[in-house]
Length: 201
Image (cartoon, rainbow, N blue to C red; front, side):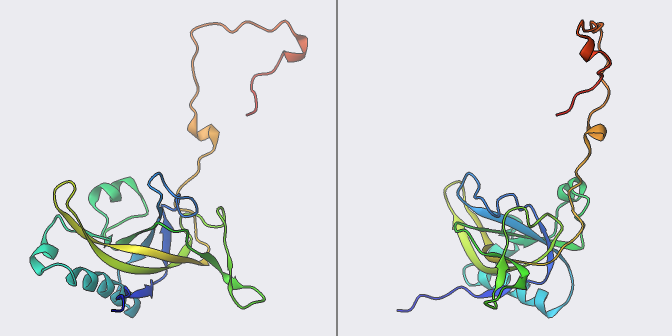
């Protein structure tokens, strides 16, 4: 009997976020990252939504799917996430993905062999526009109560174009405020050090 293959597709273009463990696995041995997508009525988005719903319906009944406890792999950010991250809002979807295997991450340029050139850690940043190659699968966990949901397995990532970074990196002068000491710092007896009021690190 042939093993049924999970349907796969390439997502619409979105902005990659939370890619800390895209090139190196987390402490659970999984590679993870997320894609921030605009809600729209494009054919590509409809196919992605259908992929997720069909995977869920293949395993669970409508009552289970309507439960607030059911965990969807793509969902609208909640109020806490919107408050925490300036780039999230109710008009977005967050597509969460994971895999146990290191996956291909490629750019938008092809090499002499006609294949897209691979990227390495540092070539991608949160905010870049990417497409994911994914499959969807339903799951049930009875270890701690009964949890059910549908998740996305990450099969590949492609950089479409660079975007503005979503995480602001602040300069040290903006991070550290001045500190008032309640003791007088003794003047150095070394004349070569007189006048130094800062140090580099």
